Image (cartoon, rainbow, N blue to C red; front, top):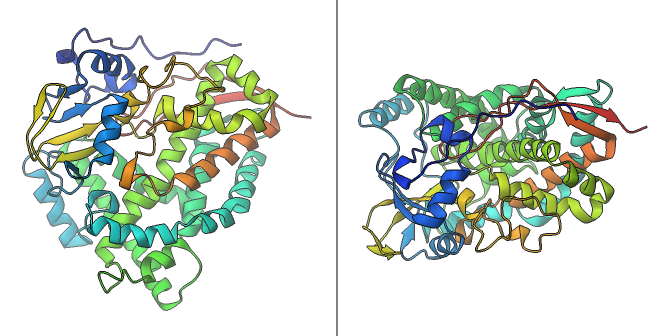
Length: 428
């Protein structure tokens, strides 16, 4: 195999005090920092951001299941933006677009439960199953476009378009608009990542407002002419307890956070990570290729566990809490480090390795847990299945190209590979 450019040696902190999750080099390979927190500081107060980081698997499960002590509702942009910036962004929404209401993920019961019921209907298993032939067809069409070339940039060729085309169809977007939508979601994700300057954050907001005006036309269309898409269900279904449908401001919040970012960005990142992992682990590639029917579903769970497209999200302490001797005051922001929990050796044997025979691979926290478990998880798994399956079915062998840097976008919350060049021989 051709030697592949690797990332520089990762930063290995000697103590929790040396960890800075806003440092792009630590973000590039956060796993030594996670290992340190898992062993020395399972509840760690980040002195830079003021968040309480929780990293161990069992602790995180308890946090996610305990809605009495840990909640999701918090003041808009609480703890995530410097003073003054949040107000500028709020005024920008008011002036040019719609001020997004709290998303489904940002609500607590009973409000969350009432809203979730509508989404559970929209994303019900039967409806997702009906999408399966379209997902399979789209994956193979994307492979058809590059299979004769012998090489491709996988992120652009498959990982981005597959989930965007699928969710775009269900959200009323035209397929020719997917790269325009990708620019909007990238801007939104960058702001979520908490590593922007004020000028960059304003730009991200303006991009989101541009997206709002695009989707507003779709809302108005399906109100007049309902159809069988997910967006029609979201726009037109009445939430019984509220006695109304979602407002435009509520819909705009969901379009960016829970549908296009939640429904495409994370799948993109897992599709990218999976091929990178197989390029580095030839034994796993050989095993997967030898029997995809046996190993592919476990491989998908191992990708989600090891690379964790969503590295971390947030909760807020609803009461004073003590965990591992650390007192967490009421109102404190809690950073739920899913990616650390997914490599906790207390739950996963040899957690740093791909194991296609791992019995508990599916118990990872890549989709969260509890009442806020990702409602798009079944669709994401189908997209990952057909994305990888189309590749395995059509490619005899492949390797990572030497020009790869294997670098990720700097982001506090998500893990996104910038690009992935591969060369391959197609099956006869």
